[in-house]
Picture (cartoon, rainbow, N blue to C red):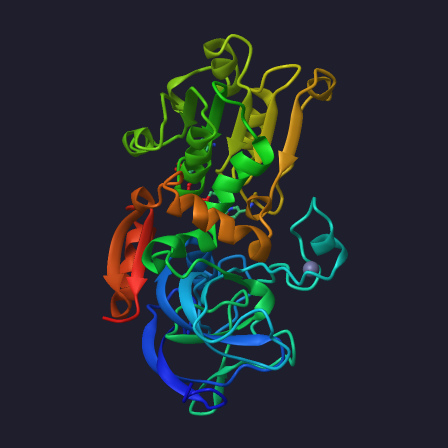
Length: 379
Ligand code: NAD
Ligand code: ZN
């Protein structure tokens, strides 16, 4: 490629300050260094996590910064030591990586890579502690190792999943984060059996992808639990058969679910981030075999409280990070589930705008409208 080894000038959406609209700027993107890859982003979507770190309320503010972590792109060039990817490969960037060498990567049971596990405060590359983005020579910080709100970005090879080049990047880009998280929480961790009953707490994009997993696993009864009754209509498209709004009941929602299901649900997946919903999700599972999986990220001071008897009664509680998927090893197969039409992604993509209208995507998310807004870099 003519651009390999050279600085590329391109458009990026820069967050200069917390909570201020992003501005499209011309940035310089340095060539990839050892174990890094420069990727041409074709599509990028907006996830809540981008909005949290843009608002920077309760998080370490790191500005100016290029946000973005759900995307699909094509390898432009690779740095020294990169052997698994070549220019032209189709990739999904992932906010958490897989070095393939640490104890976690070597364990079949973990996806919490020691080297490349998500780090929200680091705004530089892990290799040399520098940023690859500059504007007039001044550094602009990275975000979770991906910074996909740029036409070109530099990413550690361990945070890139190489996928089937025939997969449409405008659809599979949403598998970079939220959709895989919910899907994996159900398919890899809760593992519902065919014809079982599954309760999903929280019907945002993550909860609906957990619901999609329950539908794919053949669950016959899927109970959606949300405080917002407007969420039910959309959830029906994902296989939701019953809806429970905790506000419609005077007794705790776990008791409502236990009564509805004659003893409890077989599996529950919590995707709210609210600790009370986490406790309800655990306490509503059936004695003897019920499994609850926590996905939501709780408040810093939250404390999970339940009677230990629940464990003696053989209810199981688990949690998951990124749906237990190892990004490089497992994401290519998730893309294949979409290619085989087992997994439906279209219903998650409710909006699509050109990259220049990125602030529209932020407005939609702030208003709680839609699930995913995909932005195309080529206008
Ligand atoms: P979202 O805000 O779109 O959806 C959350 C839903 O939960 C909303 O519909 C809300 O009405 C509902 N809700 C809130 N409190 C509730 C309660 N007490 N009972 C029932 N419903 C309640 O969020 P999202 O983008 O779908 O993400 C869901 C959660 O998953 C967040 O906490 C997010 O941080 C987390 N997450 C975790 C991982 C991971 O790897 N574990 C990855 C991505 C996101
Ligand atoms: Zn590792």
